[in-house]
Picture 1 (cartoon, helix red, strand yellow):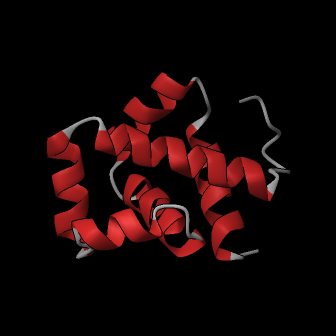
Picture 2 (cartoon, rainbow, N blue to C red):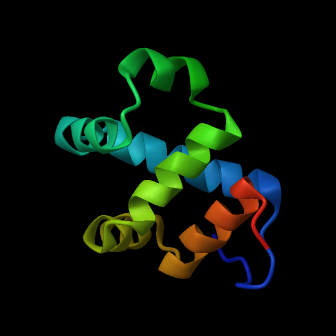
Length: 94
């Protein structure tokens, strides 16, 4: 994903967040830690997987864990700053 640091379409932010959720789901330990730290239950995760508030929570989780952020960014071949930009896009922050 080669987007400028200045612009990221909402759809691209959602796609990045869904990829991040998939990254968590691929590893039970990572997913378990996410659920434990956020208080989100498996049913809520399943029911809200595509909702902006949940996608923002996923990206927030990555932004709070630098090692997780760096591993995911490397796997996605994207700059870690793009995760922060996507988070701002999903939350409506300036």
